[in-house]
Image (cartoon, rainbow, N blue to C red; front, side):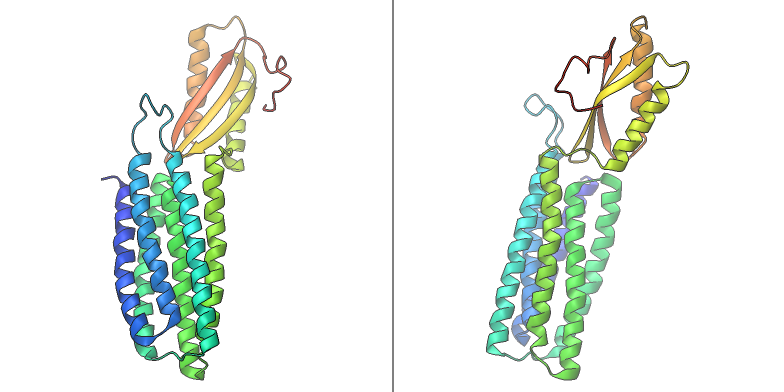
Length: 302
């Protein structure tokens, strides 16, 4: 089992544990923030199960049907996860408004506080683990899961603060009001997840700092006095899952041996791969005997 797969299994198990304790105490106490948090954990559980499936599919090797792999499943999973999180935030707002209108009091605050403290400790450990896995794998699914559970952590801390305020002030309207604030934060977090997933599906270029590093490597190796190449053009990058794709044309002296041009290309590829050793790279360097970018008036890359 890969590290990414283990992470999704751990996340699913954690979410299921939190569902049980939150839903039990939420129903017993009638605390809407805890019931809302239990619903959010239930969605976490379903999302983590889906992410586990998506990770399994995205890690399948390249084959005759999918020549570039299935990494974009991660982008699709992130978009779906974002919309589910948004829906859960909307439901929390609805439940909070209903309680605000009814004025139903919150009871058994001690038990509610205990279950939320357990939730904070458990979720904190999970977020640390998911962040560790993301740094090792660069998986967008794991990053989305980490961001999601991080928002849950802030949600749980907000719930604890609201329960403490209710305990000391007896202002029961704090419960639904804090729930609405938490729900809006959840929706805000979901927008970022959706955007990042869509960017992958639409083949957005790699991060600007990564592209600049690639350009620096190309400039450093091409502009040296003894270099056999004179320029480059058509630099394009994109990301699919944890795979970074790079395409570029390099102009070589037309008298250069093919062996020599390949040696320089291989060296440049190795330098680009060293930018992020945890990522998988697919680099395609097209070797030109002349600058063909000027012949194509539609060219927009340099």
